[in-house]
Amino acid sequence: MRQALPILASFMLVLSASAAMAESERNAYNKNDAPLVDSAGECVRTKWMVDNDPCAPEAPKPVAYTPPPVPVAVPTVTREQLTIYFAFDSAEITPESAAKLDRISQIANTSKEITGARILGFTDQFGSEEFNRNLATRRAEAVREYLRARRDPNSQVVIGEVELRGIGKSEPQGCRQRYRTRTEQIACMAPQRRVEIEFTATR
Image 1: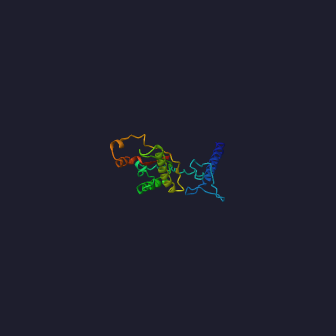
Image 2 (image 1 turned 90 degrees about the horizontal axis):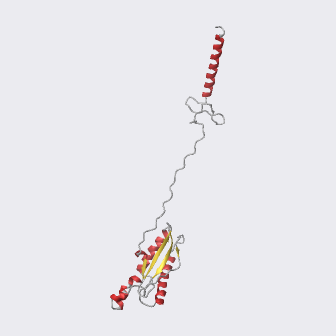
């Protein structure tokens, strides 16, 4: 029994020492449960630090998602709005046609998707093939130069060379068959004396 007492005393001493060490390690947190720092500003770390260690480096903050910009749609323009009409045997831009071309220029200058335009010249059924070809060329060039003069320097639209598509002898002769006088025939063929503008765009 005398020998058992020293052994028990020694065991109690070890437990007391372990408890004291545990208390000294836990002192890395103050009474408010906040981490302590040393003179260098570093956290006093202990072996009881858990996964949510307050001294651990901060995780990088997630980057906010920025959606891509919505592409600007090509303005809806009817074929009629892109058609310029001319008087009989004339290549001059009328005031009504000038108003149309101003609107077309505005669309071309502000759109981010329109990259170019084709200009197609047409004539009526009067005159020879050579005469109509020259007249269609002059009409198309008049429209092209009008648009070029109003092109914004920052616009990406390229007003290309004139592409001609002459109509006349190859068209149906309905107007000539329907009307007898020349004046009536000229009035009937008014829709044929025109220039059409076709935009090319990226999608």
